[in-house]
Length: 185
Image (cartoon, rainbow, N blue to C red; front, side):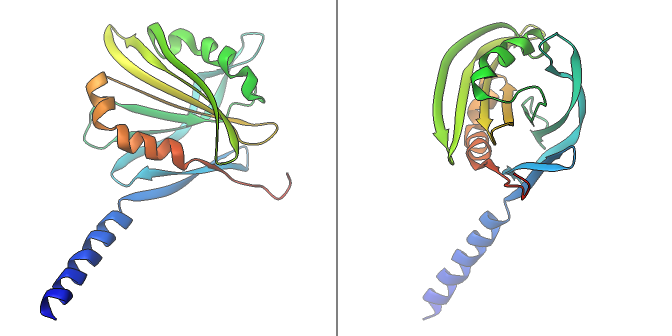
């Protein structure tokens, strides 16, 4: 009986630790909730506007609300997510990715492009390698068709060893993205 009680207590402690290891966040822009996702509890999250992440067809640079996350241990890994005003259809995602160009990486080599469905949303994903200030980087970008007029973009960039070490956390974050259904839609 004591062994069962000890095993039960240990299992409950492990479950409690695992249950507290992540937090759900909701991305809101221009007064509208777009999506929610899970981020590891020990990651630093920053929300703000960033100029240069979104471009119009005419080439004008706009500011967009950008949510970014990084492991709190200071490793060089960046995860960014946003909903650009000027990207309405996932079919435009490839052109949008190309328009980001030198803002994120140089010497980009795409290793995979894929169109699939996740949580009833179309998803276009692109992965590959590039360079940031001369250093080799992996990247992964996912475009999600949230609604008929909105696409969310999630991108992570980091050195190959770092992206390999954090692959599980990054996968959970990407797969956890769910659209928020607004009553007006």
